[in-house]
Amino acid sequence: MPEEYRNIYKTARKTRGYTQESAAERLNISISSLQAYETGARIPSNDVVELMVICYDNQALAYQHLRESSALMNRVVPKLEPRSVLEIAVRIHNRIKELENKGGLDRLMAIAENNVIDDDERPEFYAIVAEVREIVRSGLELDVYCASDFMPV
Image 1 (cartoon, rainbow, N blue to C red):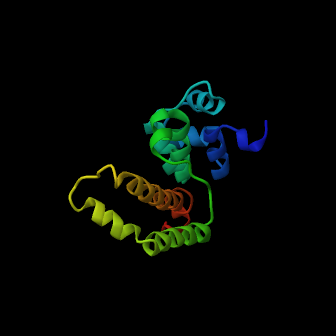
Image 2: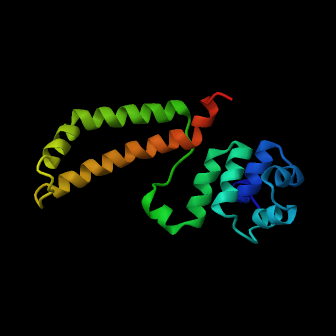
Image 3: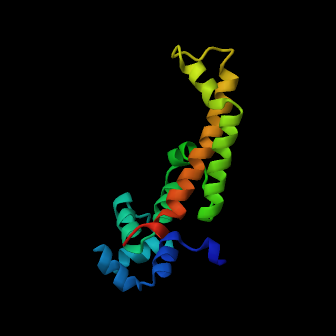
């Protein structure tokens, strides 16, 4: 099986350098439970995954778990791509500047002023929302894929 299709829980554990035995002990679960998660026989609860995220120091595991186990997550949270901190910072900067240069923030305030989005404003409002979602997406990528690299230990 190609590396990118390996089980996310197993990949996170191995990336951290833990054996199944040491990981199970740190997570306070049985080795057989960990094996079941890592073979896909069972899906770990969100509480167990939260412990894995902390133990393995792998924020991306939380995102991957929720993405694979929750249809609602897939509908609400955009698909994230692992990017470098530089690439994400540039994307955020460029998208905010573009929104500002197109007058999107001022238009959003004008649309919101009467607390009603009328039919004439709706297409422009949706276009602004789409641009803001891209900024939010990049912010999430920064948090999920880069934040732990810069947090003090």
